[in-house]
Amino acid sequence: MNLHKELIGNGDKIMLITLPFIVIGLVLNFLFPDFFSVGGPSALLKAVSGIILIFGIIIWLWSVVLILRKVPQKKLITYGPYALNKHPIYNGVAFLVLPWLGFLFNSWLGVVIGIALYSGSRIYSPKEEARLAEAFGPAWDEYVKKVLFPWI
Image (cartoon, rainbow, N blue to C red):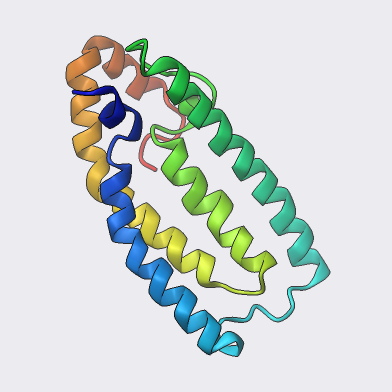
């Protein structure tokens, strides 16, 4: 497998599932902003959204840096965000970035796009995990036993 494919995993396929939701959602949000409105957002929603969004961006960046550093070395990443979840890039963006970014822009569209992204990742994660199990064998099995939220 080439390095490019190792780095992106199934991200390209997951984005093909997510992209229609992004495009159609943005068009509909532009045409019918009142329908997508979260009512302002309120000061509390802005504060909560900002805090969670910052946390989500940190998780995402940390995960990307680990991928860029460790995948070329053919090393299994079992610490940092990967100790919490097997797919912190996909899940971090789906749950900690998109919904909260949407709320800051007075729209619940980020929740829908996040659900689409998560659904796409669940479709393709088993294939990715099978490749990792094959590549890392017992180390993968031990990692899966120790990861805090393996089902997400």
